[in-house]
Amino acid sequence: MKNSRNPAGFSLTELLVVLAILGALAAIAIPVSRSVLARTHTAACLSNLRQIGVGLEAYLQDNNQVMPEIAAGRRSKAEDVPVLETALAPYLPDPAIFRCPADHEIFEKSGCSYIWNSSQSGRHRLKLEFFGKAGQDNRIPLISDKEAWHPGESGVNFLYADLSASTKVQFGVSP
Image (cartoon, rainbow, N blue to C red; front, side, top):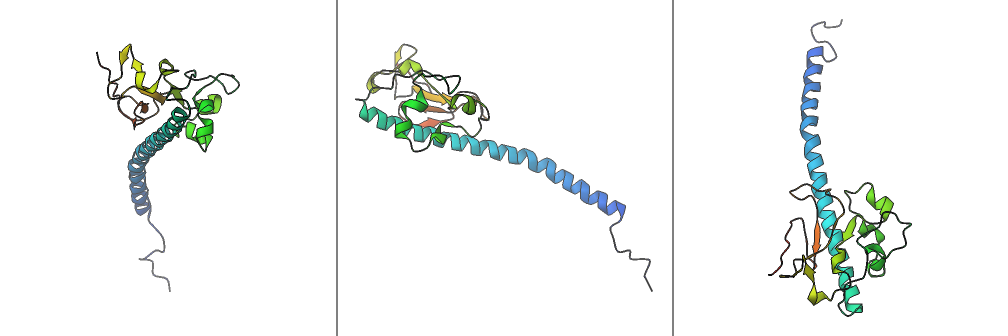
């Protein structure tokens, strides 16, 4: 004989409590996972910029310490202009280095998520200037994200003339 006091399933109240708990956990987990993912993209982008810096260093050694004569960027891969990703391609093992993980559009169109500070094109490494002033401690930005894809004040990562990469705006010029 079956015992009617202990049914073999969940009651509606128990089911609603479980669903409420799962909903609360999801409401907490989704923003946290987005934040973690954004920080991961920032770290991967900084790594890409550091690798581009290594490629730039090799380029400078082969070219008497003179910065490449390249345009800031291009709108599409079809444009035949010398740009960062074409000038440094022989010095880097993988073209994917030119893609910021947070970039979901621009890389596909132009071939690069980063923009070159074209005011430094053709300059000797020791004679860089920014806004008409000589570089101080080589804190002149050479390469940055094309868009503000990252969390933080500026949302942009930079590669400076000393080949350090940072999320912080740290331009330094002397009078």
